[in-house]
Image (tube, rainbow, N blue to C red; front, side):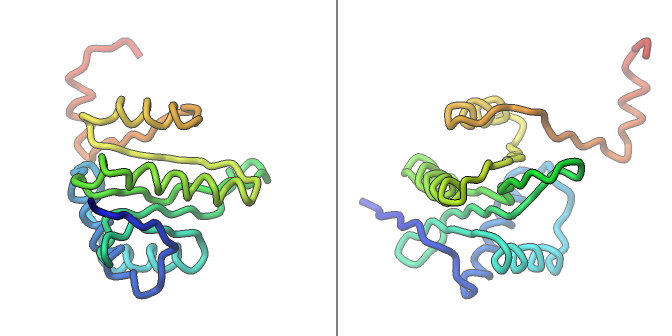
Amino acid sequence: MTTIKIRPAKPLDTSNLVRLLTAAHDESGSYPPVDPHMGLNWITRTLTEGYVIVADVSGRLVGTLALSNYHFPWSPEQFMYLEWLYVQKKFRKGGAFEALMKGCHAFADSHNAQILAGVSAGDKDVFLKDRLFQTKGYRYIGGDFIRSRHGREKEDSINSDI
């Protein structure tokens, strides 16, 4: 049986976090291209200023979750924002996701903080992801959309009276 250990991320985990989050990006296919320097900066900044945990199997990182401080521009109320959450496919059913979420919730609860999670998933998993987060006590408040540079072509092909 594979033992998955959830632990705080260390600075030495940075290159493995880059590898994991690059895999998450590549798996989705919906996000804009990654600039490696900007990605490394984001991960390093989140490690320094946020709360990052990893799912570790015998020294190999198979999942990660990060929280950072956030508030809406119109409100002083503070949240913990879910910066990223990713588990390699073959470890998703092995408890890594559940363990990362449990660690995330324990950290937020210890700080009496709400969590704001803008979680994206590939097209086929969108409704599954929404339902999964609702079962964890999250309330759906909207979604993210990306309009391509060529969105006008699709827009013109739709007959609408707007």
